[in-house]
Amino acid sequence: MKKGKVEHIARRYSNYNIMGSYIKRFIKPYTILLCVVAIFEVLLTIREFLLPHRDPFRHWAYIGSYFILFAASVASAIFLLVQRKKTGREKLIAIVIHVYAIVAMLWGLGVSLLDYMGGGVVPVVFFTILATIGGLLILNPFVYLPSMVVLLIGMIVGMYLINSELISIGNLINIIILFIMIGVVSYRTTAVAVIEEDQREILIKIGNMDTLTGLKNENAYYRFLDDLDDRSQKESFPYAVIVMDLNGLKHVDDTYGHRFGAHLISTAGKVLPTVFKNSEIFHTGGDEFVAVIVNEFEHLDEFLKDFENNLECQTISFEGVELTLSLARGVAIHEPGEKYNDTYQRADRDMYVNKPIVKAKHNIIGR
Image (cartoon, rainbow, N blue to C red; front, side, top):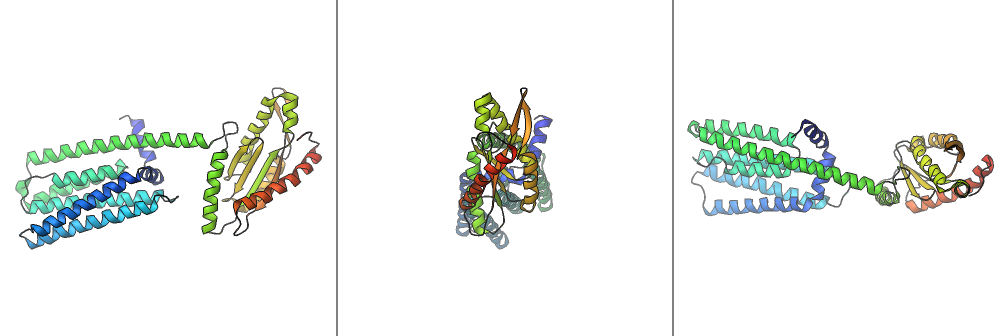
């Protein structure tokens, strides 16, 4: 794998939000895998009760280890099912699944060493299980591969302490080859996951972006409103809605052509993010824009002053023609318990009050 690709994977999958997003997309297979592991532990426990080991310590050690992985698997599966429709939990999902996978890998190491205590002759059965579980669940190879190295060393040391005769060239070669094979598969799987997530993000970005202005489009706007209303029902926080409309666009279209009008819209889309910094700004269609000020609410007055200086009226040049870029705006501050649409309607009414005032002030012709 090329160095650049390795660096890309490292950069992308050091972000737990991205990993959690990928896990969330395939939440059903992850849940099924966890349930299969839980069922496997139940079967092992039943077998241990039906055919108990002669050594009481090993008998109860097996049962205890099976119960630990069973409980961890069931708890993780329930957690995924509960979180599948919730937003903003991607990082938590990734952390929980990674912790579970490491627990499963440690479980495999412990059971393998219990087998060696009894003189087991197949040195990689449970190590294969723990490595497979880890490889399937841990998307970040920079967590998985070091964990595998530590467990591999722990397994070899444990074998030596239990019975030094278990350390044979054949056993060591088998374990190392298995480790390399699973490591490569895990790494390649992660590379595919990165590519898929990159492509998905690109498609989402394209689907939510307005090509004329570079702002978020109407589709993104309505998605944002759903999340905003849900959030505002759970917690109280201030935000402002600013509705904007270009002045004199029809006159420009009729006089110079729609290309010049489109340039006005495009220019407004470029200037708005410099005025309403770190805010949600949407081109909702035609010559209409909406800005929702949440994170920077305390700077609202400063933003409105910048708007007046930069967007209420300025002259721009396009293909040798002097054009007037002017926007009317209406502002409404969300009130506790109020739905977004009610706040928007107040801002829209305010915009229609502001529009003739701005046009008269700057002598702007047409709608």
